[in-house]
Length: 156
Image: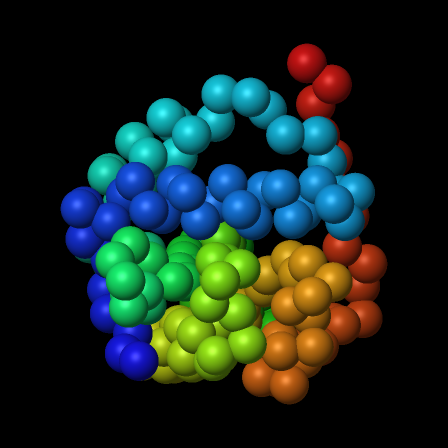
């Protein structure tokens, strides 16, 4: 198994894997899913693939398509005492196709993403975890940071 950088040809499979994750997150009760997000997601991937602030890593399935994927983003915030340059990371869309789970794909992609952040000297990385994936992230060093994660969503 090898991790590689996603290409524009992978976008349909990246959307398919994101649909799997969205369904899983809905099972955890995280939020209602909008019906028409896939086109905007694909357009955003087309725009951001290859940009300096985005890493999209994938593992190919042996029979074609993708077995797993993960996205790393870098955002600029105001510098502060714990984030002197203001740059922080966010991991999004970590998904493994159910037919390919428990084979180390998620771990391999997370390792590649964390190496990408280290190489870019990003000192803080956040993510939201499904209940299934939380043990892996904790094993890789993700911890509760002492502050509650709160989210506001518009009702419209």
